[in-house]
Length: 256
Image (cartoon, rainbow, N blue to C red; front, side, top):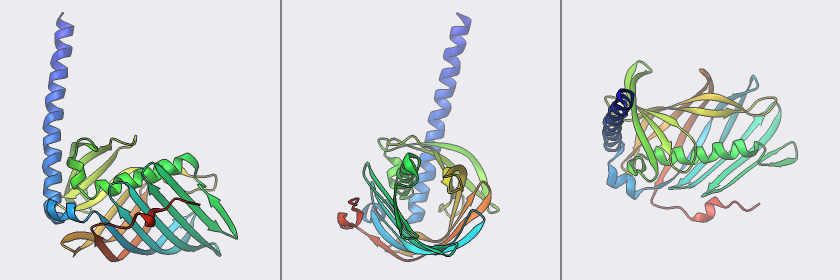
């Protein structure tokens, strides 16, 4: 009987701690929403386009790239990149449209469909979910996400509030770090995929958005640095940011 009672007591304690953590996470998100531009503005503008340019490291070699990223909440995402890698020109397109995912890579006169297999598809679905999460207001919808508070952390020498995010539509967990002073998102972290000689491998991926500016009343980052397993993998400049109410669904075609 004593063990049974102790078990119940522990369960109650943990339930109380979880409730408190959820309230803390909600408070962090609400502050971030206000810092980003406010719920009304974020809920009005649920789509966007941005130009990308930068460099990344693959298999020990550097490659410069340029392209565009387009999204429309809740589940539309498209990334188009062009780059030159080891003397070869490459073009890549990745599209998420609900449950449908398309990935195409063109290089050396060949076209490869879904070269990363199911792992890449899951990573693209995760990217779409993270895009929605980073819009912030959907995080407060319990039908879409579960959020929990974690311990504060240091990000680039400044204190950040941390929440753990679990999308309801995929089996994925990631962390979001918000500057304690400004409330803006300054880091995300999750298990991601990195290209390798024998195929993609899992890595700890950390992304650092910065250099925010206001577009249509919403604070958007203009720089992104990505680390894999603690080493710099990619640096991106984001420019010509369009914050939009909606985008034609034809932008997200998954037809071959």
